[in-house]
Image (cartoon, rainbow, N blue to C red; front, side, top):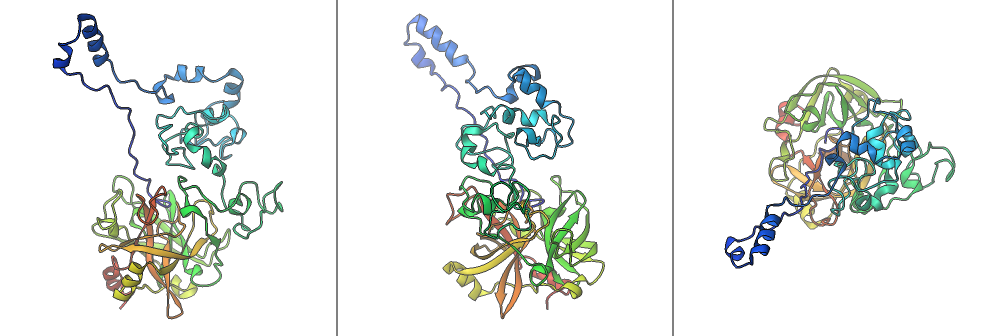
Amino acid sequence: MPGRFAPLQHRRHALPGLAPVRLLALLRLPTLALVLALVLALMPAAQPVSAQDLSSQEFWSLVPPDIRARLGDDSCIWAHDLECDDAQFGGTGACAPGTDASDCRAMAMGGDNSCRWANDGQCHEVGIGTGLCASGTDSNDCRNLAFLRNRSNRCEHAFNGICDEPGIGTGLCPANTDTADCVGRARPAQARDHFFGHDDRELMDVSVLPWRAIGVVQLDGGACTGVLVGPRHVATAAHCLSDDGGGRIKALHFRAGVSGAIEAGRAGISGYLVAPNYQPGDMPPHGGNGDDWAILTLDRDLGREVGYLRPYVLDKPALDTIAEGDFRIAQAGYSWDTGDLLSGHRGCRVLEAYRDGSLIHDCDSTRGDSGSPLMVMRGGEWRLLAVDSRFWRPQPPHEGFSSSHLAVDTRAFAGALRELGVID
């Protein structure tokens, strides 16, 4: 999940073709019926007409002239990313009016089902679903999720139980930035950010530990969450530092305790250690996901200034508690929808721990939370248990949701921490 999780694995659906016709059966048919049967057998299977199947000229001929004029062109830098960014058609507002035509076509006409994955029972629109379809092109499947489109919790007053958006609340927040308080915390199971049916997050006070030790790992072209685990070491996810081809992404600096324009401190990144067996791509629990960890080395002892979380390694009593279903933890990170405000979930659980050092949890995490800490209270002190990793296929007891959440616990990288002198 660079900038949180890697995309979910998706199985592309295809319409079944005509069943093959047996020659023996054909020989029993009258001549005319035989000919017709052969013609039908040789015809290609019918496929739905989609925007992807149309030529450019045919594609735009479906758009009424007045709407076509307002759509404009694709001159915005965010054009062709499948997400409508033109605010006049309900987009994000990242593009000037009339500069994101292709991505906004369906939204401008009230939505349609032109995506090739439409009507398969799963929402695929970018932003609210799997991301395979452009905004507004999977309307039937995304109908129950449309209320979440282009919404966030980036207001500093989010998660306080009071709607602060203009027109429907106090007006302290910009429009569409106080989602949990203004439209509610319930989330459909099919949503990309389903939060297991209910968004239980809150904004954390970064002036105190453990939240102050959590920060933003600034990358060359993106960001992830990380956490100080010693005076000059930060734990995060390996996939944050790897591109799709297995190349390394440069890590620039670490900013601890970020809250808007304020930060507790920052340091440059002088080096990092990535799990030796890490491979890019989606790896399953108990099958390689335990290698999705990395330790960053800072150029100064930032942890002595702001504090850090001592790692905690699961022992047998802890594993027994997990098996009993009552191992309580907390998670916090810089989610995509809260931006530079630290959001977290207290009281969530570890659901299962695997031998490769990966685990499944039910904390409300999303994109941007990659590398964020899962913490456990031990002896009155918050300790680092794991770093958040990626979405995975639904697992018990949440089979009805669109994904499960994987993390890598300290069993997987305790040896590296010892070699670096972070733990004894």
